[in-house]
Image (tube, helix red, strand yellow):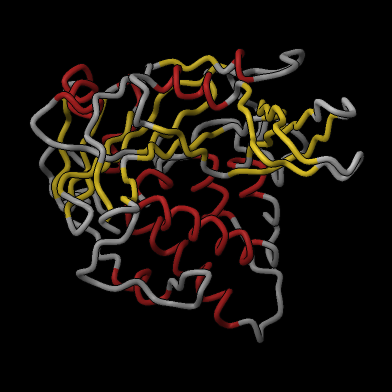
Amino acid sequence: MQQLFHITPFSSAILDTTWTGSPDMTSDSALLFSLQSFFKGIARSASTPFDPSDWICQYTKPTGEHLCLGVQEDAHEYLNGFLDRVETVLKHTDHATLIHDEFVSTVNVSVICPNCGIVLTRQEEYNCISVDVKGFSSLSDSLKAQCGSETIDDYFCEKCGTRGCVQKAQSFEATAPFLFFQLKRFEFDNFSFERHKINDFFTFPLELDLSLCFSDIRGKEPRYRLRGIITHSGSTEGGHYVSYVCGDGDEWWELNDSRVARVDGKDLLIRARGRGSVSVQWSLIINRMTARTSCCTRGTPSKPCPANPSPLRRRFPSCWGTPNSGTC
């Protein structure tokens, strides 16, 4: 939630959203008002921790379940559930396409049949891109492998009616203004039927160029800058998440429950990449390096962004207080 709040076009739009749906849709409207109250509370809590109890009680997963206090939830599952839930709610507001405009990327998946030569292509949309950690030393290497070609055995071609090995290839068609990367640091052991954590060293850049992941780069802006990291210490059975965000002036801040502190960026990157004393499982939030004049660089935005940054975080410390101020 701290990461999402510091994506200014998103949090500003949420605070500016007006409910236009039916008054009878009390659960959806209540969730929107609770989210707005949550973001307002974070912005105003300059010297004291903000209590998120109202949001926790109000929020329900897409399955209808509530969050369980004291139980470790998966950050990736929460993010996907949050975006799906909020997207449903926003359909009844004046920012109906906000989630899609800001967070959804499109991937082309192509399959080439060696028998008839037909190329079958479909498009898939993602609001969070999962990348493999095991077997790779860097985000760039993992993305190259993911966007390359692979062989699929026993594929049935509906065009010629044959079954056999085919080549499958993936590439980006369009990327969102903001990208979430989930690093797959947990795996399931089919022999022990247990989940294990992967603590391998895995590097990632401050600036990411996705040019090699596009089949056609014309008209695209594939350069991104790292803006946030979520780390996890512990095991698959339990542990602790810590959020890090990059504020104005490229200063990194640690948001650890009720503790807020400025941290050294170089030291943080070493620890987050897996070489420090803490085992980590993390997600990246990388936003476009290019200047943006609207909420979306692709398609028509749901509503133009203000000309100036949101007053909530024109400067990062003004929202979160001074280091060690206790703002969560």
